[in-house]
Amino acid sequence: KTLLLETIAGFHEHNGVVTANETDITGKPPEERGFGFVFQDYALFPHMTVRENVEYGTRYRESSRDAAELLDELGVAHLSERNPPTLSGGEKQRVALARALAIRPSVMLLDEPLAALDVPTQQALRDDLADILDDVTAVYVTHNRTTARAVADRIVVMQEGRVVQRGTPEDVFERPASPMVARFTGSNVIDLSAAPSLRRILDDGIGSQARSDGSGRSPIDHDSDTDAAPQVAIRPEAITLGDADGDLSATVERVVREDATNRVTLAFDDITVEAFATSPPVVGTEVTLSFPRDRLHPC
Image (tube, rainbow, N blue to C red; front, side, top):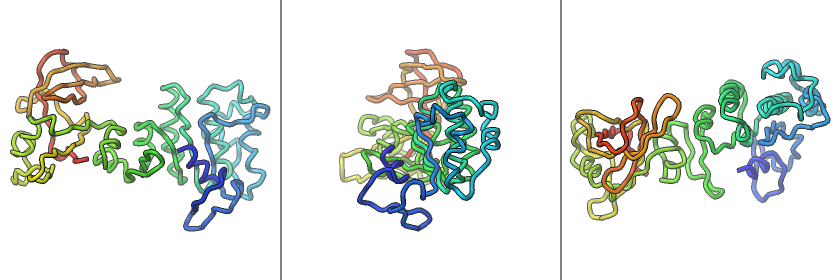
């Protein structure tokens, strides 16, 4: 994915075509493309001050933004006369963002800009990025699904250099196109051949699975002439624990505290699934699970 970003920026020769606003820019050098690039390792000049780093690229641009204004906007104006080696990781990345924005880029290219930062700094900068990127087209590479969901209007999932799904965050997270996409975005992937209890409920249209239109048909369509059971995906937060009229029983295998909730691993039939619970159940106990039909998606 880094190679793809660098190719878009013009750093590598290639056999394809790069277009921006329906214009072929394949032959343009990087400095003429008008793209801002934010690197994972910051790529700041250590011998220059923060202000000089931000101003560096503006020398070749007719239109640019004031360095002091950008540094203030990103909360690092007080560091303008410092050198990058004296800054923290979060401060360096804010300076790198200011430098990329200073040239008034038509497109921002961001290569995992939060990956090297500690969790609190990631969270703070992610919130700022969501606001900053509202005003500019951006291509943002990340392996972090929380970041992708927080900042993206559209998501493209790639596997081995190929696009396997593209769509809105809701499309990708709620309706994954394959088991790989489902797992990558944090969904449970259930092979119904290993989960006869759930498959029976889906086939019968009973319990919390019944359609609101009364049809009783399963949303998981499969050919009755084949023995191959489909796989379905469901988000952990969609599974409900402890309902009196739950669909099936499962055994609690593990409970892990996560911020204000608990991630619970549950076993039934020959599979395990993960769900969230505000109150942690006891490991080894039996609980009921409910699977909302409209949150199950074939993959």
